[in-house]
Length: 613
Image (cartoon, rainbow, N blue to C red; front, side, top):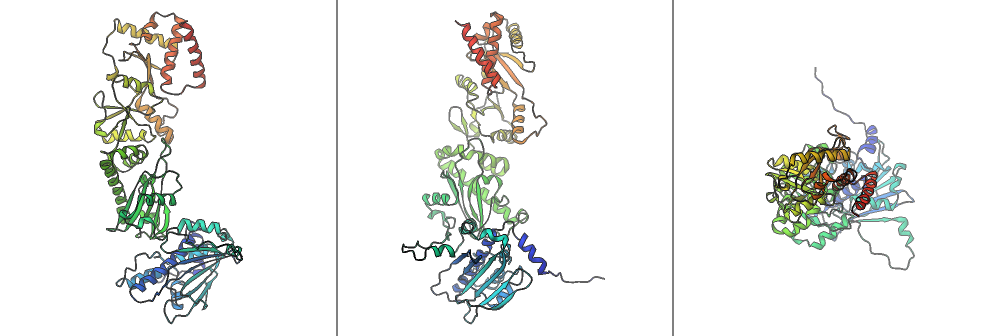
């Protein structure tokens, strides 16, 4: 037989859970209490708009007062206030949302939902995270209302009585517990206000009773009272009404960056969802590492968190900016975001707007785009790897810098030996190879950022008809000389044997090849595939079980070099010195010599100079 019953919640057991687990960060209590105050002000504004309340010359504000001696923190709004019945209804019923009820009641008369922050009715109880006792003094906007006082020590009981408040609005008084005493300091509270409340929609004023007393009797003029927040942040303005100076000033205000941003995207969407914000492309200070960005997520001007990848795609985290999405609740969870279709639409839209902006800059401001490229390329390449749709939008505006300093798009890439694109990963280290290319009128592209290791592999996957080859990984047909030499095969074998004996390196592969330039006696090439695997292992550990294995090196002896030609007839002692010196010169073009190798190189350099006395 089936039976039905009601689930009961014991408040005596619930309060300890609320105090400890309601929010992950204790400092968030101030955001919740101040946000409730903003909602109270917004409600009164809405009622005044439809003529159901008289605001007079009312100026909305929130006052926060710290009394270090009394160990209390008070948050006062001059909004709608509450009657005794409403206090009983909204405060004593955990998770009953007064905001939600207000929206439902007035949804046909006004845009009641616009700007209302709280929707769950839990925000007030965050006060108990730092308090052992909380009081409420409130006076409703209703003309016949009486002031109400409510108090509870966080147990399952409370006291309610007539209050003494004479001005419309609500004051929440928090008595600090031992666990909450860190917030009994003005500097700590200012930090929290800056973090969570810097852009809330109504003016917020903060004072400390003890600091104010210090100025009593001071004849000097007191500083003008200033709110701690900006009520109309730049992202709320229409893009056409914002100046370059305003965008740059706002960037400095929000982000601790001594460099100005390169450019920015102003998001202003009303349909099919409400979304506003500004995304900045920061200047990259490290040319090798991708510098992390910072995107702050807001809901109705109230800070939620930084870098929530469910809303902002991971690769956009390299940017800096703010996004305000009122459709997201304050107490949003990651699992909610991952499974919400509207959030997915927001994420896709942000990605599209970024792509559209980049394409616009490329088409209309090509010179500026090229000047930005070194800074924005890691972001674009990372985005292409993470999001194939983003790559489809970006592939025609990705730039590749040639060794001659010219920027090319993919269709203009210099191809050698059919489908090979040669690239440079370190211009200084691979200078010898670059010179060989330049001397022979050949071109290569520069890919020197750490992310390029992944990007070239990604491009080969996406564009299967192209193969990327590092400039020092092989000798292409374009570099080989068409000259033939007498007794070529016999001489080649002799040269290989001479070098094997002189170097004594069993694992070193040695080949002979006449090159177009005779200036370089030998070069070292490194297997492209093995080197890429090693590069990946350096970044991510031993992913392929090849830790410690060196990529195969091949010594290419240039038989077109006069020095190499002379080796066959050279005295054995001198030949050994010259062979080792040739190898050292080739190795220097690949890597830094070890201390022992450098010592030997210097010693042999002196011996070589003595040979030409």
